Structure formats: C-alpha cells, structure tokens
Image 1 (cartoon, rainbow, N blue to C red):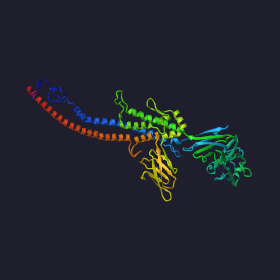
Image 2: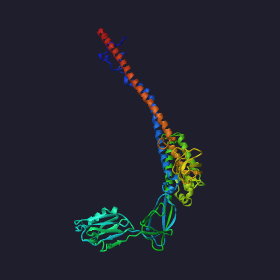
Image 3: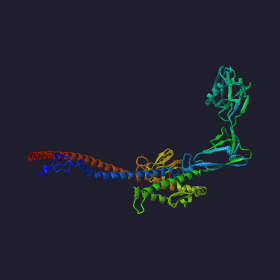
Image 4: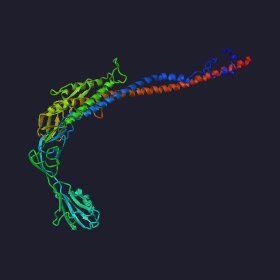
Length: 567
C-alpha cells in the first residue's frame, strides 16, 4: 500500500473523522445504523403490506357490523307487524285496542273512563249509569282542640261490614289527633281510615271513612269509656250521629242488562275491558261505546319500518358507493359485495309482491324519487278503516286450521301449509303431534302443541281441545312484514346467540376475522425474524467496525513511522 502526499499532511489528517480523509482505510463516515435500518425496513416491507390488509379487513368488519345492527333493528321493530294473533297476551300491533265514547242525550262522556287490554273483543255497547258506588263517611261533634288530652279511657272495635275488625285502645293522655292516628295506622286491616278536619279556627272534627265502597262502618265499644259516643260520632243507640256519605253499590245497565257491583272499577263485565264509573248519567241519556283496533299502533309500526329500511339502505349505498367514473369510492369498503346485494334483492322482491290483491302501495308505502321508502298516512288510514283484515293479511303471518278444536296460539314464521297428525291415549289425552310421520317437529305438553326449536315450525303454538286422534290441516301465509323481518333476522344472525347458524353477514365477518388472525401471525413471525436479523446485522457490522478500526490504527502507526523516517 502506498500513501501519496503523506509528508505534506498535518497530524490532524490521521484522525478517523471524515470520509474525505486521504487515508484509504478510514471509513469513519459510514452511518452503520442507517445501513442496518435500511436492511430491516426491506425485511419489514412485507409485514407492512400484510398490516395494511388487516386494516382494510377491519374497515370491512366494521361496515358489516353496522349493517348487521341495522338489520337486527329492522327485524326487531317489525315483530309487532309480523304476527296478527289476537288474544289477551298478544303484543303485536293488530292486537291493540282503543275505545271511543259517545253520548245520546245531554250527558258528558267524561262520566266514564275505560282501559282495554290487547286482544279484547271489538264491538259496540250502550251504557247507562244509575248510581256510582260510594264508601260510608261519618263525622263527630266539633272539638275545640286536636292536641289537648281527651281524658278518655276505653277500647273499641272498628271495621267494615263483612270484613276484618281491629281493636283500638285509648288512654287518658291521648289527644283527638292521636286517636285519629291510631285508627289510621290500622286502616289496612280495618279498611276504615280517620282524619281531622279543621272546620274553623278552634273547631275540629274527627272523620271516619270506609276505604271500600258499598260497605258500612261497624263499631262497638268493648270496655271502658264509649269513645266514639263521647266524641259524638255515635248517638246513645250506637248509630252514627252525622253520616256525611252513605255507602252504596254501583248500579248500571250494559246493553239493556241491569248490573250491580260493589266498586266503580268494573273488570268482570266485558273480558279485557275495565269501566271506571265516575258519575251517574241523567235519566233518558246513555253512553255509546265503540271498541275497535288501535290503528295508531299499526301506523306507528309502519312508520318505524320505513325509517329502519331507509337507514339500512343508506348504509348499503355508503358502503357500495362509486365515483363518477364508476370506480369504488374511497369509503366504499364493501363495493360490489354479493352478500349485501342478495339481501337487498330479496327485500325488494318481497316489497313488490301482493297478498290477496293488495300491494304495499295500497297501504301508502312507496318509493320516492330518491328510492327511499315513504309512508302516506292518508292512504294508510283509509285502508285501515275500510279493509283492516286485508291490511293485516298483507303485512302479517296468519295461520288457520281446518278444525275448531285446534286453536292457534302463535303463528310462527313458516308459510308452509301442512297436515298435523294428532294422537291421544285411551282416556282421550293428547300424546303426540307429527307431520308426515315425523314426531320431532312438534312438542306436546298437556293440551299445548309447540313447534320444535330449529325447525321451520319454531314459534308455532296450538291448543287442542279435542279427545280423539285426527289429522288437521294447518294453512299458513306470510305477509310482507313477516318476510322482511325473517330476511333481516337470517342475514344478521349470530350463531350461539339468536340462531343456530350464522347469517350471511356474520359469515363474512368470521371469514375476515380468521384471515386477520392468520395475517397477524404472519406479521408477528416477520417482526420476530426481522428483530433477529437486526441483531445479527448489528453483531456482524460491529465486527466490521472493529476490523476497520484495527486497520486504521495500523495505518496510522505506519504513517507515523514513515513521517518520522522522512524527517
């Protein structure tokens, strides 16, 4: 090795400070960390590409989950329109009932209030109220003080006729207020309450009131002073001195039938209907009661359906949007997704069908210029008024049987018509129900028959009142709401929660999550291998640096010798 011009360099030129040094082996200007990082980055490029795919999958999963939530809400909100079973336990929109109260003659309809349970029988009724039920109320003589000791000592019995009585003990130090308080404290047993009424300044009366209508207050002195007689609540004969209100039963006439009840809350005249009698109707007048379907519930449910459908549709459009050139929009992570397209196609096909000649346009549902589902309340109101049965059939699932002995309790969602074969034992007790010889499709408990979970008959329920074996034809139809609800439920189903199997969206989510798990493992493996590679490079480059440093030290030494010789 020759070192040209070495004699002209100063001692500073022998340092390891720059790549511009004339010393050929001096490589102190090399950025070793940069070299290592470049090699590491080259290795990690594949992991970065995989991570990008994981991020993209995450966006797709979030989009699917949003649509899954939309469909789940759509299915849940349609439940009230999917079934039209009418019974006291039904909660669907068609089971709702409301009453209108009119009048014949000069009478205010407010003299009656009503509450009606779901499934109550519809119809018209005429009501006259002769008298309302009242509780007995009595008062004592005016006392000058409610807080001065009465000086009375005695025990008496108090209650209502036909009910329980309580024993009340009064001591000399008790005041009028304390007597009222002790009576009040036992009113839940005696059904007699007490209060103090201030008539004027310095004037107080003890008032006893029965807490049940149509029953007189009973009183007897059992020992010591006759307390209520001393307070002039009763007279010398034991009768109440001042009856403020007599007890009496309610008397009324429904559809020409005279009736009497010991309360104004009448619950046992019409099934599912409670009458609250407020005031008697004047002679010659009557109340005209009409009990019908609560169509407001149907209107509200259809409005919610339109809102839910549009929310799902809007999210589908957002996830499958395109640019003007037809390419996928940047946020359209599910562009061209077949599963979503199939769900939308199924719903659109259902909305385009008819039932018994009626279509969704006949009940006010239509698509506007933006292809959004809208509801015309006027058209719906007319349809509900003129053809409620048709609207019900168009929207809901309906099940009918060929025998009056097989009563439908719940319709389920299967539109299939089938023959239900029933078997009984020697005593006429129901023992089994099968379809086509398969007894696993229905379960029997007493007289109740239920569709087995996981079968197409799940949700169906019947009650059998017969005592002989027979085959009964069951005919079912599914309306628009029932079908849309089932499509939404199936598509959004999650295995193990609301379904035995996953729906189309959950299947996609599961697939993406499986891919992410695999790809994340790849990232982990690449990261681990790259870390080992980085450590290897550091060790290898450290050796290079050590060798170069040793060579530089030797070069510097030789240079120094040459310089010394030249001098």
